[in-house]
Length: 111
Length: 119
Image (cartoon, rainbow over all chains, first blue to last red; front, side):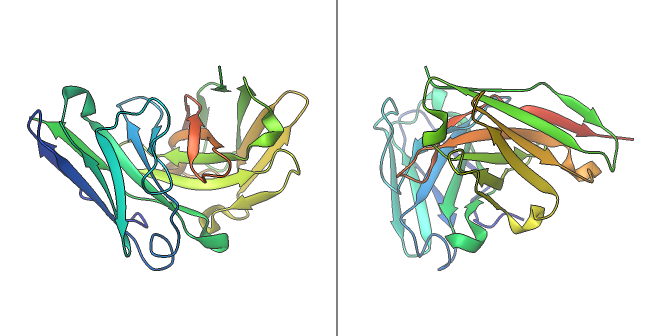
């Protein structure tokens, strides 16, 4: 059982927007603006897509955006494209005893 | 370009140990912490521990305390993760991942090393 809770799957049609939630606690997401999101294709290493809740690394599409409210972070993918079909994981810093925790992952399907 | 190259797949028996290497290139090895993350087949990501390559200081997830050791060799820009007393449920891909520095995220990942534990 993962420390952060994500929906197992989310789907959408091309061009639509989808939202992936990531629910933690006051000890992790609620206490730190250090939420990151990773995209992973089957058989590949994860790739950083969002860091510090809302920031995108260079080269990451601006169709991806992150937000946070209380103990829940969210990743929004707008203008859904076939290439967005992958697994997405959230991660949060959780203090100097637990350090980092991940969500269980969300499979995004483009219909 | 920045790259992390991991050692090859391993097959181990229960109770044995495994040591996975992660060779960094394209950046100053001692300037970024290095993390280890594992992923069991079909499962999610799990943070195991990290090392400060400059000082050698380490932190580990409570789940792995006493069973995992992360070390580094600054002369070869290589980080190592050793896991002892292997069990069947340690079968997983093991990734090294560079800490982005001020941003507390994992910005560069190794390709992963499959460790299979089987009698």
